[in-house]
Amino acid sequence: DGGITQSPKYLFRKEGQNVTLSCEQNLNHDAMYWYRQDPGQGLRLIYYSQIVNDFQKGDIAEGYSVSREKKESFPLTVTSAQKNPTAFYLCASSTQGMNTEAFFGQGTRLTVV
Amino acid sequence: GENVEQHPSTLSVQEGDSAVIKCTYSDSASNYFPWYKQELGKGPQLIIDIRSNVGEKKDQRIAVTLNKTAKHFSLHITETQPEDSAVYFCAASTSGGTSYGKLTFGQGTILTVHP
Image 1: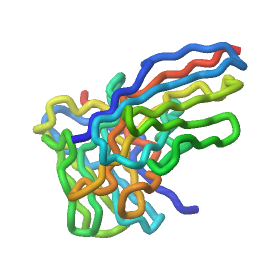
Image 2 (image 1 turned 180 degrees about the vertical axis):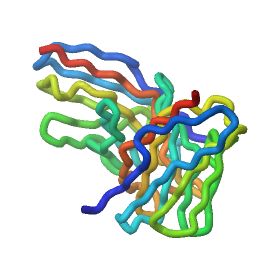
Image 3 (image 1 turned 60 degrees about the horizontal axis):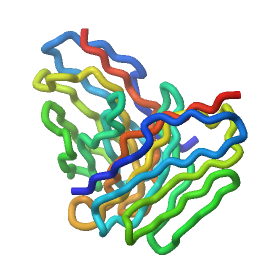
């Protein structure tokens, strides 16, 4: 089955630690995205990538980093510099360009303890 | 950049009634407007989308209308059912430059359909 897979579903992190969220897709999509979801604020874009080895900052990139070494994979690292990391993180992919449907993963809920 | 406002934030209806959710956008260059449904603990799923070259699109009980002049678009759900209960998001696609294909989302509407 084609789709987009995020892991893990739940993640706990101690303050001061970096943590990496995984996102893999087998849809052969060029573009991939990371969104953060907080109650009442909708989805806010963290980073996006339209092609391998290239990515751009979204609206709330501070405290996050990404890489895009393979077309299928777009991992997100939440660094210790992110002041409020507890949130629901969503990865998405789409064919390159506008006017195309974005497919979302099931999300990772990150909690800082 | 693009800004999308969505209203209402919560909507409660009786089964069988209609539900309407409205969104406005700021970037006149946006020309793709999808609607997503998100169930608890899951990722959003596309339910319907509209492009700027049409004013209305229907898919069974769901319809979307677009007014490009006023820069607003709406989701209409008729004959609502309890399984329609979810969070609904509108979005607009920002065109041009490095923003090519990037979606900007509204804040979401929690729809509750009472049996």
